[in-house]
Image 1 (tube, rainbow, N blue to C red):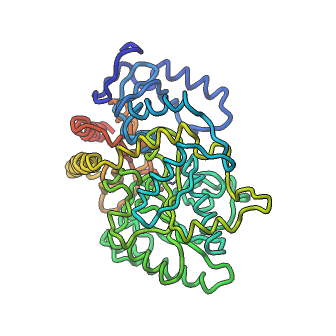
Image 2 (cartoon, rainbow, N blue to C red):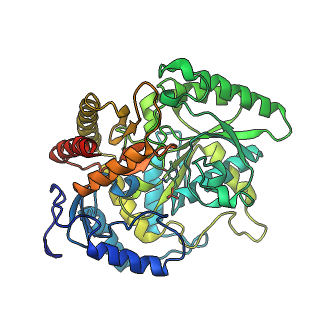
Length: 463
Ligand code: PMP
């Protein structure tokens, strides 16, 4: 394929050279020579992306992949979505920077109002950020201002980002370890409802009876009687990086009720699950009104490829910021790129399509197809311990055998590698490195989903 070959975004993969090809290898080598950190770990050379359209990405060797990562779920409308590209391009000729807390701009006003309208009535106040981690920290700051309490209840296996404040609430194996001395001690850790690997009742056999909620409640109640009580509970409605871990349907409403009884705020981290990824616009809507949060963190997919994140909150909670305006009149929070005009323009356009009923219908239809396909593959391979899916967020958890449920991290790495050799990109996840995660563009076609399922089967056959 010539570098100029037109891409539609609906193509199937075409692998010309076994990845990573020579151009990827030398580009990665040059990058590694100058990049400051071990940013892609100790692993082999990765493939280096050059171009993308829809659900398809090209590497610098001309290989064409079906991208089931969408950049960890960011590219909700696919790579280089034409409407986002047009909006970004028009904005880049109109206004490219605002003046933070001093002077807003028109696009910021529009985006904030649009996001507020997506908050379902209750969450009608919005703060913007550029990354998920930054927005998580903004939610933590908000909760602290609103409750006067510094600590938060957070979950085992939680992933909330890697800046210091976000690391304080993240619990992903090893991530914060080198920085332990600098990470603030904010989190009260309680077990996430991970029924397949129940953290409190290993004999429950995947049939969850919410023992973990009782255990969490006990811990929280004890801390509430102590000298440094928590002010909020922070939870992913579905854990993303830990492998698409879905709580039982009654969990979130019960947690919400528990928090309300004790005057604790609920913060939902919807950075990965928001923007229609799981079907409804927010994943909490899957569990009904009773699961509605006080604060909601969004990022990734709401921008369709631009770097934007947000906190949506209830008025009474968000208004607590107003009491903290500095004596000089300066805002209690700001950043140089706050509500960056190009990001606002891209996000505004993206939200239009994400909020459309057709998008939800498509996600539910192809999401069901994908999940059914993965279940059919699981029926043939005992290495698949569990298939989990919600809309277009899906995962397979790989085990040595179904009886022991012992995680199979090597097989997972091999299968992800075999998928890539076959032209399909997926990302490894799970706290035991044994989950293959799929977060494709929400625009993926039925034909591409069918191909993806076949590719998973082929990859498992040869791994
Ligand atoms: N929260 C969740 C649920 C996430 O999945 C992520 C990113 N994977 C983050 C927060 C952090 O977002 P970012 O990488 O943009 O800082």
